[in-house]
Image (cartoon, rainbow, N blue to C red; front, side):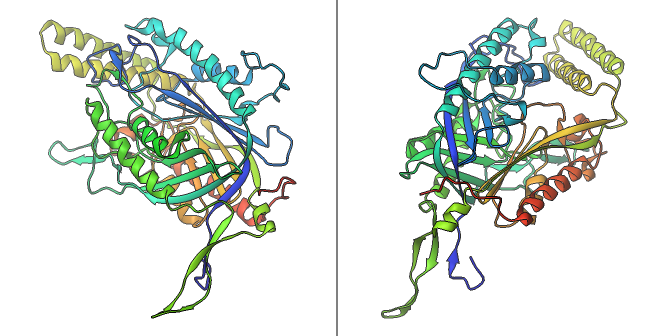
Length: 509
């Protein structure tokens, strides 16, 4: 609302937009063990299908190229390793495999334009080619090869579907997410679990994408919460809560709904770590109803809500109305900027060597064998979990080959009034809270777990040395999250202070 409280502006943008979706559900029987405590190795069924949705954003009125087109691939997986990510992005950058008769060839894509945004579901399995020798691991390679082909064609389909579109943004709240660093005072440790007294960012940012006739093209949901409803007891392939959320929203909008994971390093569902898929569906519907509530508040594109003057009645009334923006104001909504950058971050100096991690793994393997021989199922399960921890630690160490610094990728783009930020790591919630606090009134879509898992968790400086799970596996030094916040804030501030870039020649209607 402006200074005299007679106008409410709705953040919005205008660009060319395309989308397409496909099913990427792995086969039953594939290696599925995502949780150290799990006693099973292979998926025994499917709770809900896994999907991938390609979203394409193009600057209106400009030639399509590396600085004017962004491709977001929203994928129902937890993470992929560096090798798997390289294969995927190489496939997407390659020409589409399906014939496209009577259509002009698409401009080639560069790596910096492609953002694979993982929902971070922990119910999809760990798709690591190096685990091909595990039970069900023989399915991993063929599955990933097939998925990469699907995603390549999916992106091409989405790019060819691009059309003029408006984006209308609104912010709401949802209480699904909770703080998940729980002090266990009895045992003197901090566990990864629901902390009812801890801070939790409940911000829910929604973008409605509409065509020029105001028909729904997509609903984009940006919310920070680990999809960890389903845990070690779950034996089904599942998208976790985003699956039911999408289903509910799509029933009402008739358009695809896409979940983009926010800064959820210390956030998870209030009710989580269970084996019952019904709980995941309930969590998803909780988020879905919050999304629908926000959508009901959105006005038509390119309007503002303003006071129209007094009306004499039994009382002197003050009616408001949705008023169409002037032509120059509508043109300003097509503002577009794009920037790919990195932040230099120091690796921790206290990381173990590969030899030390391998020795720890060997010790746990021996202890598991002893426990199994003694019939101690719980001890064997704990040892198996510790082996899994060491396997993942070895994978992280392989991504930091003795170097002092890591260069964390950041991708920014602007569509009208909104800023989008995509980062590779799993930062704590303070990233999105700090940025949104610094730039109130500007929708900032914070997308995490993008493109790779090398950086792992980014906890705040004060979390180090407390034996918190996220800190214990972090590979980057204290202060790196704070460095990311400052670098992102500087870029956003620069854009907002520069004023609008040249307006495109394509005017929104």
